[in-house]
Length: 419
Image 1: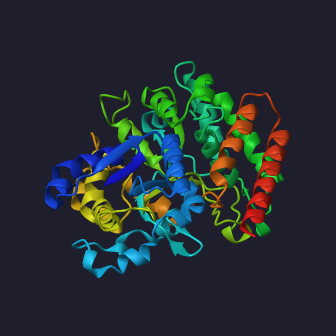
Image 2: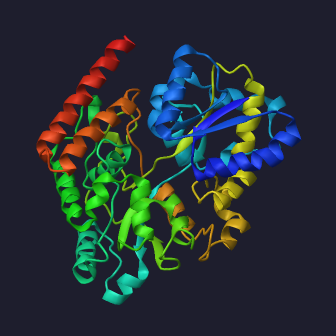
């Protein structure tokens, strides 16, 4: 049986547990391939286009759910297989918000939530204490704090850091965060692009202002580079996925062990309701980049695939993967309540000190990108235009107008294909 997933700490941890437990116990031989996210997309795209069934289980980013919704077996159909129930497997234990926003399309659950990188605020408690700065609770306060940190601690410490690599998904992620925080959205009612309205312009102006208080190299960094700069002590605070929090307490990687705290993202300046958006877009400051496991509709070994999917997303395995793999895979209520998780809520390798903030973000602040089928290709186009904006090659209004044109054209093409 073959599985393809992104090369992430949770996948590394789950694969390692699988080698020592799942394979010897079941006798099912599993080839689990780990790849960069863009190569996973390319491989899944080729597999589904040919309906080849080369891979039995796909790792699918939430941004791809519209594109591959018809290429995986509906979960209810799998749950109805009472002869293949994994002992103690409780689907209802998975957080409902994750099922809805990560693994559902058109009202149908198409996979099992697998991990949940979701934005929280990471800040240097020692710096805020030293400068007598309060924890920012609003977007304007966030900027004031960033400015104060840089004013008092430059050139060694910047106010913030960022993942603004031109043409990279990471840049679109940051832009989405500020777009939603300013009350904007990619789409409005009736599938109409709103990414170039006045709220979006204000959001990008704020993002451009933040660039003055981040390392100049931020325009070459994705999420790895931004995290590296933070754990090297080059920034006072930043907003990023909570999965990176465990790195700050790892002495092999971090110069700020025990100095960093997690907090909720500041309150949005405004928030557009999901009812005023399209394609299941749900604005929220805590942007989520979750993924799900889907059983290929073309698998030649669907029974074995379903057994492995249940095992990999069971309460015990997801708890252990959270502890071993950086804390990105707590997708169940029981993960957050597990004594093993609570015991690690202290400074040290595998820390879960940020889990309470993560759970609050999932339940109350989660932002989800549009789930239209052509979204993955739009992400690439948007990231290119945003790269021109963040490097000063193109103005904000011209950037957003071009993005809106791409979005409108993509929606029209998709509508024609579906007729």
